[in-house]
Length: 272
Image 1 (tube, rainbow, N blue to C red):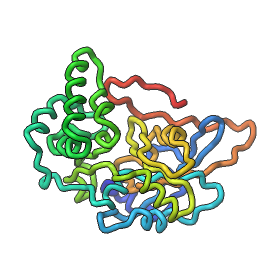
Image 2 (image 1 turned 90 degrees about the vertical axis):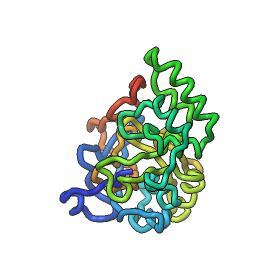
Image 3 (image 1 turned 30 degrees about the vertical axis):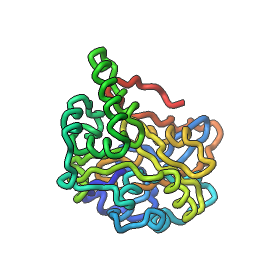
Image 4 (image 1 turned 120 degrees about the vertical axis):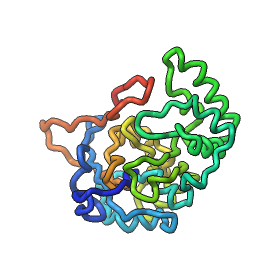
């Protein structure tokens, strides 16, 4: 989710669906010969007092017949569910303090690389799963195999966001779980706005689709957001409206989206 403190330029951007992409991102991309426009949607600073369907309905409107789907940041949904916690309120146990030494930070954020965020993961998916992930990671890491901890811990653990210095207050001092029942959350937002909805966990290493309303192609969504068009700096755009674009014959297609960096130990593969 791009929920960080806006600079002067970002602060001057209007609320709602934007016609321009976020800084250093592409608005139009192609996928399997089709062109899509990914319009970032700027909102107010979302808090636990907000309702996710109401926020999306308020800012992501109007929606025309050319809209393929709407993507929503998993962090925004989790915040509205009350699943964001100040770091000072998270008391890590001895297991989290011990196992954190086996966790490699993913290179695009803190992830589970603090005792507090690791404690949230233990509470979320259970100590046995985290112990297994740590054991496998500890065995394979000396051989240059990375990334297995997050793969074994699972998407709900991998979706946990830790604080970063550039995040807007109060989330610069908070850790956030992944959303509860992301499929249900996607269905609820879809019912409110009348188009398919995906709940995404995107960063510069790629995109995971945590939840989707019925009929939405999750693999297509993940590929369309592989380059993290919503960003994670000053954008404050946790929602994206994806439109189908009619493309003129013989005009070169925009490039397909690709991850902007590779997670430690992961082999970069082209989309598709």
